[in-house]
Amino acid sequence: MTFDSAEELNKISEHFPVARLVLRLRVDNKNATFAMGDKFGCNRRECFQLLHMAKDLKLNVVGICFHVGSSNHDPDAFSGAIADARRTYDLATSLGFDITLLDIGGGYPGEKGTKDMFLKAADVIKENLDKHFPSEMELSIISEPGTFFVASAFTLFAKIIGKRVNEAENNTKAKEIMYYIYESVYKSFVVSLFSDDPVDPQPLVANDGPKEQSIIWGITCDGLDKIKGFCMLPEMNVGDWLMFESMGAYTITLNTPFNGFPSAGILHRASKMTEEDLRKRELLIEIVDCAS
Image 1: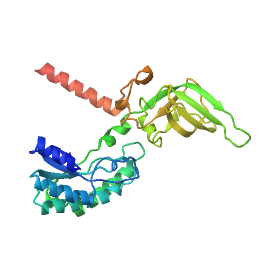
Image 2: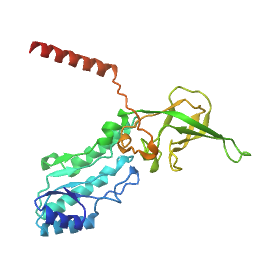
Image 3: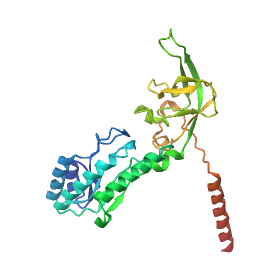
Image 4: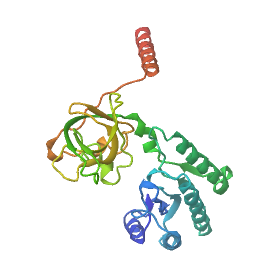
């Protein structure tokens, strides 16, 4: 059970004093799309106070955790966080706590094209764990790689249902094309309410036409339903389709029924290698069933 405030410790002491507790550290990371520092975690001074408070309350602190933020773009963020975890570990053990767990959280990129960034993060993590938490310490070290596993597993396709062309004005304003698609920030694109940087619309069918300044709007009546505020696309038409890769994280799980539009349908597709492997497994099961 994690804690990062005196109020939480008092609550645990009253209702579940036998809990095995994990102290959450604050990580301020401006290079994460969804930073966690403003909401969760405690700084060094607060760590000192909370560990002393936990000792006075006779609570059992067994671990330390942190999260560098979802969609983290700075592998070096792990370096400072792991160093802070070691300082906290030393303080906790000096107070008599038996620290057996380190949770280094998530923040690992899983979108297509981020392999190099992931490998850099892995190198930074390994180097700093070897330095601050060598294997002879015998800690259980875990992480939370949710986005890494699911982001690239889904590709979203959305039909253009409306189009509006704003022509250039006396060389003071460039031509701009607005597309309205059968999707929404209230459906699969909640990320756009915070930052539309990860959203990368591409024509489903190759189009070699000149690229125009474009905006992608969602289907609802809300003026905030803007999926992509600026992108460069070849001119497209109503009925054409846009493709958005790496849509497996924080998308369909956050769908709402706003304006009554249904959620996107899901079609499963396997690679040829996976399909052949599954067929072999099915055949093996049939053989075993017949034999038994």
